[in-house]
Image (cartoon, rainbow, N blue to C red):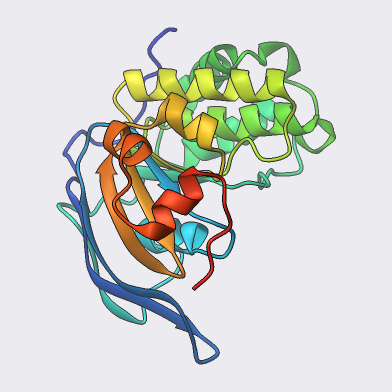
Length: 244
């Protein structure tokens, strides 16, 4: 796939360093004492059962919510060096291409370049033929492709993906996974949550495994899937529900 340029500065924001990060809401501890460092390369897959804290962890990293305690630190702060795509895409009430152009304008892309960059992003996502279709009438898979194209168009250094293929049919899942691989190959760090073991095995270079709001394993993908070190991770890999 062709390279999509952007106005995002090239200074690296890595590593991403979390130190003793906690998050509580309404008196309930949802994330507890997470310490981890993520480097610029490699696809990081965040796994765990429902309610483990996967989405919360990525929102904390992305800066959408603040930790109740601890620190989330980047090597350098750049407003547009990161992006996030949610399980249910948040799309504007306008055409597909106008959704992408809006993101490019927000990151400072020149007016004369925005249409060309947006068209290139849609082409890479395989939805160029939908450029002038209203975004909110697209199918679920098309909406997710558009959300990825919009995020990809600004060339972020890191892209957070919160279960981006949930509820999609197999052909849409395959297309999204191919996009994710392409984004990674072009130099954007992928941090993605999923509870799908097969998908994680296809995509992961490393795994963060959460259980009850705690990071209980951080390992290379091959090690995690073949020799998980904790009972919780072993039960999860075996397809068993694990409750303490």
